[in-house]
Length: 268
Image 1 (cartoon, one colour):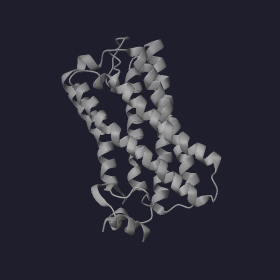
Image 2 (cartoon, rainbow, N blue to C red):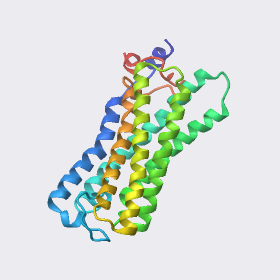
Image 3 (tube, rainbow, N blue to C red):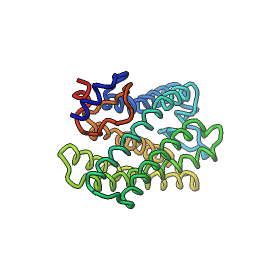
Image 4 (cartoon, rainbow, N blue to C red):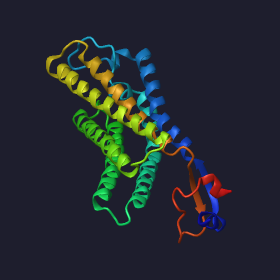
């Protein structure tokens, strides 16, 4: 009733399905990566297979296919459109988790709040590192690109791990959909860990020993990590299946209660 009375005093300026926003957000880098891979593999094989060892290679790295022209422009444009919604999603998760936490504890829990903040800032670190690794090309500045990529990997894996901890903490009793989401997150985190181990092994074999095909295996692990990362963030559609993102004009003194009723019902 409170939510409905507030909406009566406010005008809805903009409304979009949060699920659709998340689908578009995840689809942007995925589609761009596929287009970059296909076009670079067909038309620019000499450019994408060049390595310092000059050994046989069949699978180019993500940096190779997104660092050449004109693919770099498509990749950078898609990432630019991708970043804004990612920040919104991270903020929504933070507010959502804090709301669930407030229902579990009658008094503020310092440890839980620190964990929530850590989860949020690790997500921000991952987003920032994604920007860096996108716009600082390995062809333009390899040392900086390498360091930012390492930061991205550490931030991404740490965020996944902390998210699993937070998810279990704020939802001790899960619905069927939440259990599926939690299971998918665990599987994708395990996939990322295993692929990261493989990536490190094959990178050392390529960099130090110049083994033939080592860079191809490194690149394969890199693609698996990228897909697992995107799929992990894609689970947001399971966590927020019916919610809407709403911009309202009106009273701001009393905020709309989070998760009280479905957004569409509020508007009606």
